Image 1 (cartoon, rainbow, N blue to C red):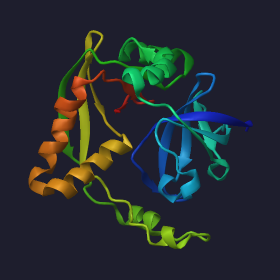
Image 2: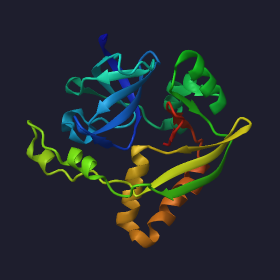
Image 3: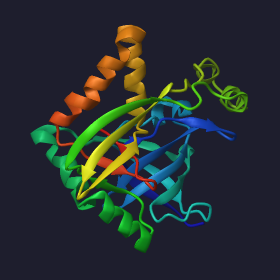
Length: 244
C-alpha cells in the first residue's frame, strides 16, 4: 500500500449503500491538482464531522492510498480522519468556464471509446457528452425496502458516536431506479443514475409535492430542465452516468 497526501477537487458522490464496517458508505469522484481522476472509497459521508464534510466543487486535502483490494488505476482508499477543507471552491462564472477547463481533458468522445480504453489500460473514470437523450426511465426497485441484514448494518452503533450521529435518521432506500437511455457515437445505451443528488432530489420532490406530484416534478428535471444544459455524464466502471 502506497500512501500520500493529495489535494482533491470533489466532483460528485454516489447515493449511500449499507456497509458492515461503516454503517453506510458512498463512493466519491475527485480530481487532483495535476488533473488525475480519483475514485475515493469508502466514505461514510453522513457520519463525517462538520469540519470535514465537503461539498461538490470544493478542494480538500487528504491522505490517500492505493490498495490491492481495488487495482483500478484511479481508486484510492481515503483516510477520512485526515480530510481538511481548503476553503477553496470552483465557481460557475462564465458558464462554468473554470469547471470545464479542469475536466476537459477527461471528456471522452463516446461511451464505446471509454469502454475500449478501459479494456486496454484499466482506466475506469471519464466524462462523455451524449449526442442525444432518448428517454428518462423510472422503474420500481427490485427490493423497495432494506433487507433485515441491511437494516442491521445501518442501525449499528459506533464506539465514538456523537449525539448527532446517534440521532441521525437511518438512511432511506430509494423506491425506484433511474436510467438515461441515450445516443453516444453510433450506439444507444441505457445506464443507471447513481448520483447522490438525484436521490436527494427525489426526497425533496416527495416532501414538497407528495406522492401524487413527486414523480412528475422529478421527471421534469431530468427530461426537460437538465437537457437544456450542456449535459455531461461522469462514467464509472460499469458505465453509469452521474449527472450534475
